[in-house]
Image 1: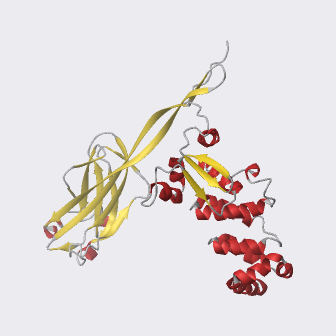
Image 2 (image 1 turned 120 degrees about the vertical axis):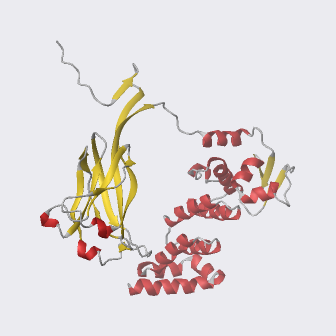
Length: 372
């Protein structure tokens, strides 16, 4: 006889292809239900002589579906503790309960400085008529000269926290969800020109696009088409001072939210390095208020700083408020092993002429680097 398979608290169901379609699980949950009760003893001086081991109880109160009562011994619980008052919590209802308890005396002066606080750090197990508390809660002589006793009245505050547990079963239907293809669909929409309603002239090239998509992605295009001075009915618009291949790369980002691939950052009529193209793209991103694309360009340029391009990148960073790129360029150029070669580069002469304030920044950075 084959051995029986052990039962487990979690189960899984599979199709013939071993593809999970349904799983179940359970969890054990422990919660604390808390409530407070104040037991006010009026005429404390009269109650004080009832005798050792004698007590008075509060009215019953309910916490967590169980009934409780506060038990107060004004003359002490035992002969050994007769100089102390004792306070206890009693479970009145039947059954077994785990609970925490806390006692404190309320200040009778109205200043709110309650004290003599006793509490359990972990739950205690109560059974019917079970008492738990402190036999030497407070010395009677101290109580009678404290702010907790005024006009022959004493207020005992008790907080009960009943532990409740339950087991919950959860079922999860596992349905495979493919990754989003939104960017691919939008790029296809751009490439197919389906539904295009705007033609953008950049240099000698023309790009068909969708005004709604451009406006949703760029505040500049939104103002151009739908702003107070915009024209939602325009069919063509010319963009100046941007190279067509740079605009194409930016357009692909607008539709895909992805940094353009290397093949998108090339143009046979515009011979330059990918770093230079990224610099142009950063300027376009700043012009059309594309913060995400601008940061992408900035991050790429920070990773590709060299002796030959650091001066140009520094000027670009200063022009377009790219603080991280500016800091990276200054730190690179200020290094003793780089400074001499940077000053010989073609870009450094342009920097000194167009942005003389950057020379001050460079000298200050050099002073810090050399000091360290």
